[in-house]
Length: 556
Image 1 (cartoon, one colour):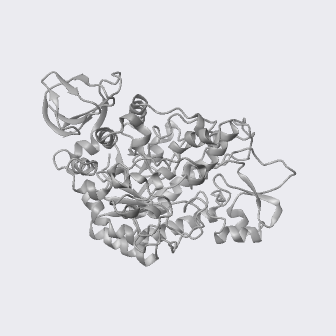
Image 2 (cartoon, rainbow, N blue to C red):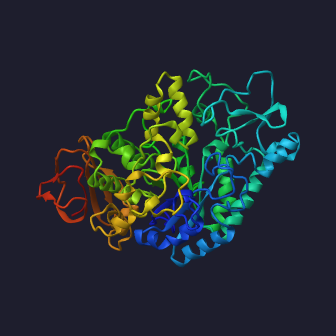
Image 3 (cartoon, rainbow, N blue to C red):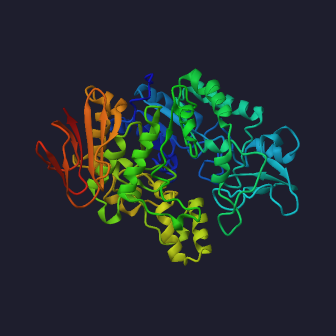
């Protein structure tokens, strides 16, 4: 494998609306990111991924972009972004923005021009079809519920396609002019000093054409987008062209939000000359999904989590680098999702950090993850901002759930859980702002906040700093980054054990249950590199792990 500048890095995702507010309007901003760079540098972060901060009507919290060349006034200005890029560069840090090009906003000039003249140049920037009575071109269901087809404003005889919100019309990647505009924008940002992109929903850019219906999987008579994506082919032509025209000439980092990739395509996506530098592993976060909706999801167990991670690692092998995560802006808080509620402790949070961070690949930390932020308790749909959760709430109601049962079924998976304001300290509004934030702060901020954990040498924040330091350690770093992944005692229930082997042999062990476990040692332990508990019981033959204890051992 050719070594790349980003291989040994640690990435931190920022959801700017909820990170830090410097002008005290209740909304986070770009100067707030600049103000916290030293905090992030001290955490051991190298690369920052900033979720969308472009102009947007916020139908989907900024993932509906109305201008790709500007900054939303709520977040600041282009000059603020330039100052952030310069401040990051002075600290040897790198900045990524979100690249959202499956769709734009219905308030983007392209769509407005398409509405003015559907048969003109910009009409072909989108998927616009004639309306024929009540028959839709296909029965695909939008990710946010309802059909993917919506009447074209001003033209009751026409309709346009949107696989997400109706205010997010899909861009027609089959049109070379659309691709040229996208590449021009990508290069504009990279020339400005940006270091790369996280690429949103990119697998959706290739539609299976001509349109066709798939078997309905809910009472609405519609079909999940998954069925179309599994059948679509030829996306590589677009992605390879984008790589060659943008990322590759700039030596930029790119990470794809990729679902439904086929096994034979893995090397094409993230191999030596892959479309992207890396792609996310969502196998654990999508475990238990049901076509019926969130109310029918199967909760993940520690054993399930282990198996998801191991299967993903073995599937990729040495083909390329996965990007490993336990949470992001679209997911619930990792500690609330992966750890049983009654076992949610400081030790179990540290164990989860070790287990995912030491996997082969690139570790991503989402804002607040480093202090163990948890899901927020929701009792009414009136408290919910997330359009996806609102849709799933109504899906549960339609399935016969009461309002109380429906909110109880969907709130553990709501995207709001990760979007509550960052908990900086114990002052009002968690030190995020002096004004009431756009989304309520989790009431537990007085116990869980960065300021308190900075002062506590046993805190989760301090523990994450030890993990990032180990990844950069001159002695062990190459093994952490490039070491082979080999499962250990895979069949032992609620034990997650694996080797990382390269210049050294590291053994990572985690007891994912309350009861102690005795684990035979495969050799002599030369040194304990990390331990999430105060004590450790070990002899030459075995190690006894306490409740939710995790260790990283240097073996002979």
